[in-house]
Amino acid sequence: MKLLKLKGLLLLTLGVMLFTSCSEYNKILKSNDKELIYEEAMRLYENESYSRALQLFDRIAVHVKGTDKEAPLNYYYAQCYYLQYDYTLANYYFMKYAKQFPFSTQAEECYFLAALCKYKESSVYSLDPTPTNDAITQLQGFINYYPNSDKVEECNKYIDELRAKLEEKDYKIAMMYLRMEEYKAAVVCFNNILKDFPDTQHKEEILYNVVRAKYEYAKNSVSDKKAERYKEVIDAYYKFISLYPDSEYGRSVESYFKVAKQFV
Image (cartoon, rainbow, N blue to C red):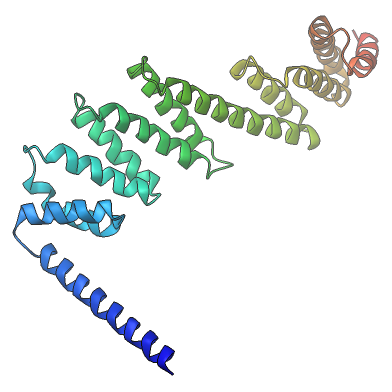
């Protein structure tokens, strides 16, 4: 019984404290004391109450323009969104800070965090390559602007990761076309991968699949197109075999080559 009374008293005390805290916050929010609002916003930020801090920063943003508080307010404003995982708005406000205060000691950090927000956003998407491309562009932009930054290595790591993600997506699309027997589209996709990602680890498989797709395309062509298309199979075969003479795909491409020679 005493324990229940103690719990009830504790809940009542917490309720009173919460009500008092809310009343005090609303009083400060409506106050005209800009210094008080700024100090409370910073206190809330330090206590990780980012949503409330944002409301107070909004309340005085127009009043700190041109003062020594303008840059810090904009920095913490962006951080509030970042620490609440709102990477879209955090990216916007970090970039805004970097452009508005380019000589600030925090400009480099804000540019990097803006790019990092794009990187974090890109991990959410799988089909649309736009966020990934945007992240690569902004990370590369940071490297170009701060080539001597200690964050360059980290940015390059993220770019490599994002490019590998794009490459894997393109490879899966090309293979999908191959399975769907859309051989011409498959060849175009495979060749685009070789052009866009010249250091791809899939190069051997891609060149083999180019030979395979061209062979199937030629085999299923009308009679008057076969010679021309089998000639492309032979060209693809020679390119493959010159690079990978001992490939595990050697027997398969050799069989395509032997058939193709009969039509050329």
